[in-house]
Structure formats: structure tokens, C-alpha cells
Length: 262
Image (cartoon, rainbow, N blue to C red; front, side, top):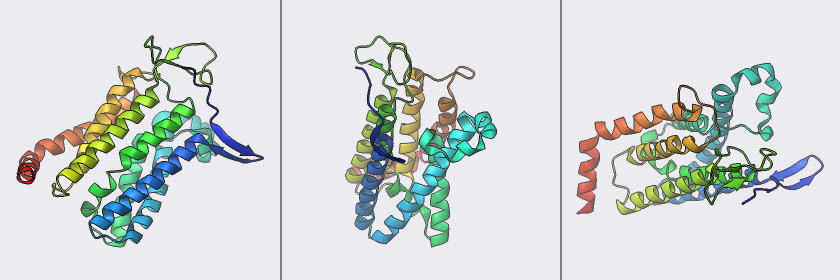
């Protein structure tokens, strides 16, 4: 396959609509609809869902931008500070977005005087679906490409390089994995009728998403630092946190699953 997709869908003077932006908006809208549905099922006000999604969208994007600046290209942005706000030039970090979402949720619940533990497991359910749409946007932008491969599903990215080199479509790998995680988490939520211990869904997302992210990084075209990519090093704390939570709360979540499968 040759990826010759134009990242711009429509352009008129200074106004342009891009595939990445379209996928991002679709992901946010679907996430909002899912959160509204989950809130309604748990007798939470719909207005709270609207406010929360607005906050999380802004906080997540700020975190994603700062994460890219700090983790991936700090020296460049220190020399070119005007580029910091140029999101249209690319540069968002999923690890930064995760941190931004967490901090925004804590701030929102503190200001609204809500117990964050009661809603975080609901909010986390559509997050991997949003991630799946974002990775599709990366594919249409010919960014975050994979390393060279001779596999039959390799893709040429002429917008990335002039040479004809087949590469792993790592964006598609991550999109399909994120979609699978969304289906899996939603299945667990429905199967156990929301009777799982608090933070179970949140931590299973953290463990699954960042473990698979760690593995996919092996086929990405990124420089290595002490044998691992920056994305892998950033994923390690999340993986350890998720694993630690399940080990620490083994009796709690095993007891809940046994009770609710009878």
C-alpha cells in the first residue's frame, strides 16, 4: 500500500479542515455520548458529563502538547518558543495527554466537590476509543511511522520520505489495539454490571494500554536511549503502577469477580 493521503480535506484561504482534526472531533463526540450514557445509567446528571468532557478536552490537549515539548523536543522549543502554540504543525504526546487528563479530573472534582473515585471508572471506558481515532489521524498524516519491514502489509509513506521503503503501519497497529481495549473494558463493565471495585477499570486500562504501547514501540522509527525509545521509558511507570495495583488489591478484585460470576 502507498499512503498518498492528503492530510487536508478542505482548504479555503487560511481555513483548513484536516483528517487528524476530524478524527479527533469524532473521538471526542463519541466519548461524550458514551459518558452521557454511562452517567445516566449510574444516575449522574447529564450536565455534569458535558462540563467534564469540556474540561478533559482542554486539559488533555494542554497535557499532550506540554508532554511533546518536554519529553520529545525540549531544546527545539526553547530555541523556538513561538512554536509551542503551533499545534497545527504537529506534536502531541499520549503520555502527556494521560497526565493532563488525570490532573484535570482531580481539579474538576475538587472544584465541584465530587468524589473522583465514583466517576473515573466511567470516564476511562471511552478513552481507548478516542485513542483509536487519534492514531487513525496519525496514519492519515503519515506521522509516527514504523520501521522498515518486508511484511505483505507494509506501507510506503512518500510524504515521510522520498525513498520507497516499506514500513510497519504502526499507527494502524495502535488504533486496532486501542479499539480492542475499548471493547474489552466495555465488555467487563457490562458483564459485571458495574459491581467491580473502584479503580478496577481504570487500572486495567492503564496496564493494557501502556503494556501494548511498550510493545508497539519496538516497530516504530524512533531513536533508542539505553535500548528503549522515549515512549517505552515513559510507559514503564504506568505499567508498574497498573501491575502493582492488581497485586496489591488481589483479594479485593478476585473477591468481587467471584461474587458477581455466581
